[in-house]
Image (cartoon, rainbow, N blue to C red):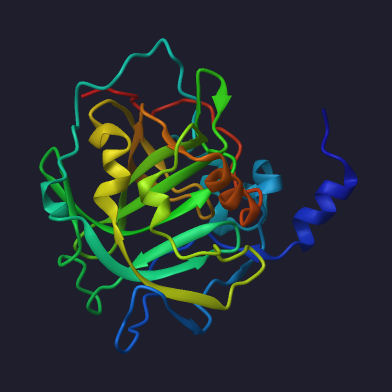
Length: 280
């Protein structure tokens, strides 16, 4: 079915907030768990939208990879492919789990950027896989989930973005989020009320236990992995994706709170090509 004229026009004129690069930590004097400031965290308007992600490749040459890439993300994950026996992530470099940074809304939902010293990323929590070490730069939430599993999309998905020592995105942990029967300890840490998608000027200095998020998905002991890309233009490839098999369940009111401050941010799933799902 052809997209409507109104959708094509919206693609050309809509101005939205780009997927956060998590480089925007600002030092807050006497940082306290609930200290609020009113500064712009640096989320810039873009010439693309998630509602028309099928069209990114034709917007300008810099986005060509969104159309021609061989390892584009996200993808659909089938229940019949089994779990990965390779590339197991190791989180001993996360230490105690507590990290300090900025909590904000990236224009689509909750996000968090870790405090770091200039261009030195190596003092951040580290994850090891194969012979690589990468560092947690920040996290953000998409709603609905980018990845489907067994044909179903969860209500949201947490992306934990890891970079190389030089600050280049290298690995992302994807954790699906759905409502359950009890509250999530991880989400209970976040400042209330959550910052809305229409408030891009506020951020909050907060300390968060990232180990809590991992614990709620069994420390990623079961996962799918593949070679993929960033899920927004310019859709750069070379990203190792880890998608947790376990779902991070939150309380009903927690789920409603998250969805209340989110807006649509799921890229259309891409055809599997050279993704090497779960392969060595």
